[in-house]
Amino acid sequence: MGAGAMIGILERLIMGLSLIFGQFTAIGLVFTAKSIARYNKISESQSFAEYYLIGSLFSMISVLLTYGLLYW
Image (cartoon, rainbow, N blue to C red; front, side, top):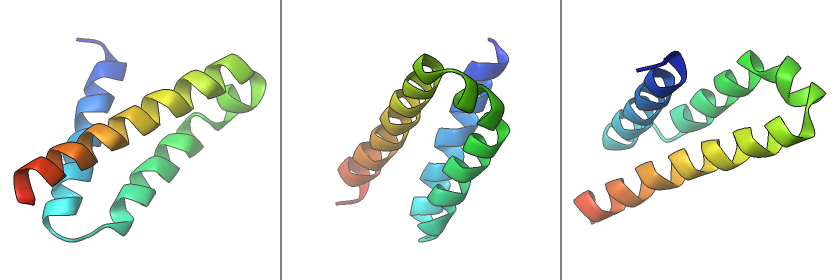
């Protein structure tokens, strides 16, 4: 498993736990931290920026849908 895959798993775990404990703003913090870490690459390459945004939004949506299915 590569570093990117591990980061994705940890990202979804943190977002899921944040939802469970009612810390909804922590999801924004995760997204912001990821964006800061990748800022140089995002600002240099439009194709990477689009790839990054699609991946991040898909990850966020998957966590929200899973939470919704389990807790509603």
